[in-house]
Amino acid sequence: MFEIGKSSSRVPKITPRNNNGGIIIRFQYQGKQYSLSPGGKYSDRLAIANADRIASQIKTDILAGYFDPTLEKYQPKVKQPDNVVSISKNIAPNLKELWQHYKVAKQASVAETTQKEKWSQIDRCFAKVLPEMLSPENARLLIPELLKTYSTTTLERIINDIHACSNWAFETGLISINPWRRLKQQLPDKPQSSRTKKAYSRDEVNAIIQAFRGDWYCNIKSAFKDSWYADLVEFLFLTGCRPEDAIALTWDSIKEKVIVFDKAYCCGVLKTTKNNKARMFPITPQIRELLDRCSTYISPILSKLVFPAQNGSYINLRNFTQRYTKRIVENLVNEGKVKLYLPTYNLRNTSITHYLRQGVDIATVAALMETSEEMINQHYWSPDDDIINNNVQLPKI
Image (tube, rainbow, N blue to C red; front, side, top):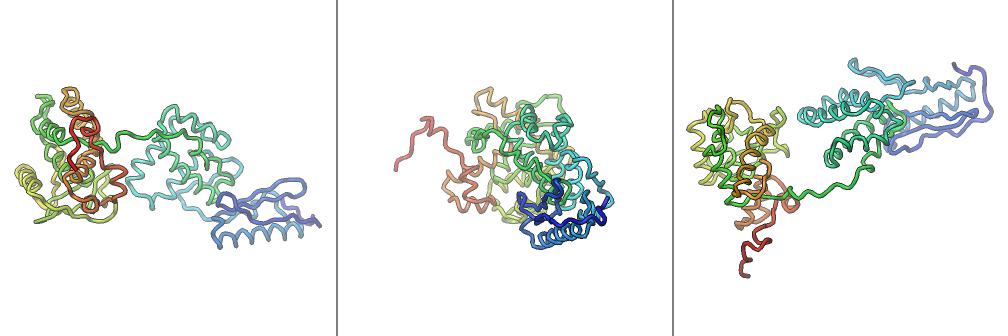
């Protein structure tokens, strides 16, 4: 109820303030504390101007005796889409509710692969904790609870999306305080990965390709032979391309002298390459021989895949790594032909490392692989374990 006709000679100081990048109007009147979030960022001039207008309206209403203590009169009037359910201002929404609203609001602007892979992971994450753990008052308890299920590395990715969601909710006025904004500070130190830069030796690559091509570890009764994928594995080693680029490769991208990588297939979605631009890779005699061999059993129709699954569709990289690469390489490890198992993606590390060791300069390799010299040094260029372990002598200098 408005305080009609009840004016006050003492008007409190009412000005917009910076609240972790957002805007908040906080003041005391007649012994009570009031807080209002008009929405927008503190760095946005239009948002500040709107907040000043609201603050001025509150002052005027106090002087005139028309102040609304529920603050409903001063809330931003924003028309929501029909498919968004309003959240009651009397009940603080929990993180799961905010997440559902965030997904609706961002659906058109976020890549489909992100929605399929990262968003579904957040959904599973919220399903694994008790509902009360997602309430604002228990925000500080969320990370200890999630650490019972997830590694620090996985949680770091999850929290990035939670931060994006809670910041959006604060900026749009769905919440007046963001208790989830500092979750990342609760994470323990992330252990350094010792596997990222690992690469296979030349002998190990040859053993892996032969194991695929010869069906060494394939059930003799299986209708799906490992040998179907031998050319794909060899291609990944020879080109160093990202696996999702090879999976999407069609015959019309095979030119006379170059391969054009201009699309990728990931998480069930065909999209542009990682950097959103096509790159060309020269066709060496080895690659030409491989492609000619593929065309004898794979339809060379221009629109057809160069490396399809055995049912003719796109290869599911995650399933391929688990069902084929992991099984075959672990068998080779057990027989002493390979030192350790590395995922399919590490064939890219292997290719980059071998080209560098063969004398191709790092700038050229970076351009061919559509990456940077910094990324190569940080993630792809594997040290030579044979030299480090004294299995091979250092060359003369």
